[in-house]
Amino acid sequence: MPRLVVNNQPVEFRIDAQTPLLWALRDVANLTGTKYGCGTGECGACLVIVDGQAMPSCMVSLGEAEGRSVTTIEGLAAWGGAPDRNHPVQQAFVAEQAIQCGFCTPGLVIAAAALLARNTNPTEADITAAITNICRCGVYPRLVRTIERAGRIMRGEEKGVPVPAPATATTAGL
Image (cartoon, rainbow, N blue to C red):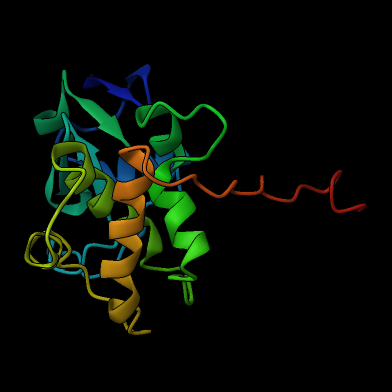
């Protein structure tokens, strides 16, 4: 039974260790922010942070993830030290309106967060090299600006923008 830490919580998956991490996260842990895209690790929709590195979860088995720390889009705020759901990358994506349909957004945010965890002041070349995700909506022109802004927030040079909590049936008046 593979054991790992997911979003700062110890988890034991009672499924085959050869199961791709993507399916364990989505189907067993119900962490559906990580998306299935190509299934070959090329598109970036399924990126998660494994021990500080962005990795395609469709290409990592549970057995390979055993004993490691995995952060999904759902746990990113806590990973970045922002318990109020306001990770600087999430703030910058909202402020720069760098979200279109939203399908690839979790992977883009994860890739940007992993980059900025290593280097809070990346060059445009650093950003281009680190963000290889495929986005059919074409948000690419806004990505460099978004990641630069997130870096400024992380360095304390700029104040972030609060990200609103998602609506629930209670808050939406349903």
